[in-house]
Length: 468
Image 1: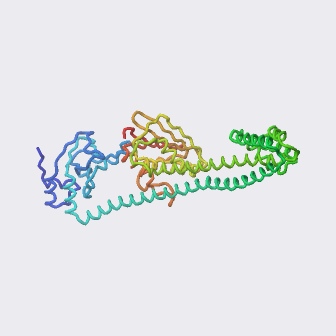
Image 2: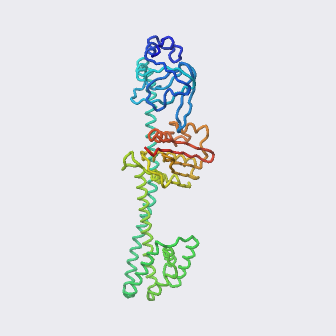
Image 3: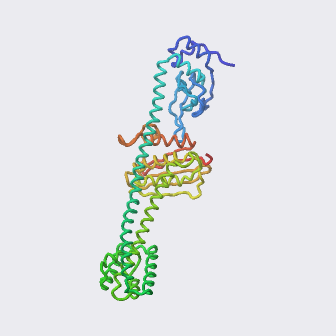
């Protein structure tokens, strides 16, 4: 049976003490009286906001979920304390509770239907509601606009880094191509000299075989230390000088890089007639250098291809927005995009090879990795160790991003996920990076972000459900 309320009794609640008789009568007619036992949740954060709750007797706690943990925001036993559909005045079809209300003792509440209550507030206090609604909507739009700006700034930074990374291999490929053109021309010239009649066909055939042997040896040439390289070049240079080969020291550097030594050059000497050794050695050196340059071009173009593929993987422009994705691939593409920020920082990757694919919005998760890794780089100030791990725990995929920075101060830690809160200097951050990350992981993927910090560093733990 519904409890009948006396309008006059409502005035003892501070929230209603200034209302007139007609307004009190409407509340008495539309409000239900609800009793709650100690420890019972009156409403739950995230559920559809159906009622505006007002405490009549007892004690109530306002609770928010922060990084997967319940945090008591406030507690009150004052009659008239309210919660629940506190934004009922906003005409929103998907109004949800922003917090949990929990009875700390046996308590009694008034429950006003959110839609009707919101409509009455707009009717009774039109000017005030316009101002309050404008403030709420304005803050929301401001957050959205600045969030978009944050993304654009991050995109600009990433684009600059990508351009820098692409420029290096592109420039290397151009330089190698220009050098290759000169070497090929020199090789043609020396071949014409060798074939001018001084060498018979058998000797030319043997030289071609030696040239092929030298070219094949470029790929398997041993890695030498600086001291070993210097000694090998000195030995070859002396040998070439003794045999009156011009440009001995320039040739020595090329031949050593190709893995050739004095013993191998002895085979060339025994193959060609007197007076042609210099041309033969230079012809072979051109072939060795040409192979080396082509290797440089291959490496440079492969690097460009890797960067372009990483950019495509990062942006996910050619993929469905929601799909099963390999978190390791997403992390690697993000690290490639942030390679400039990682200069001077030791990177440790501990990826679980058996981690299954995760149903997710990959482009948005890349934004999460970007925000957290960027903060880690800033915390370490260009030097330290960044460790990224992936693992599976039951039905959850876990990504850990750990830095060796100074840690997050105790007074700052509770606020790091607040919109607009930042510890960076003016102009360096908007304070939306971690707020955006929180919303992407928790609100959109129904996952969790946890933070472990000390003076030895900070670890962000991102947990994503494998079931989607």
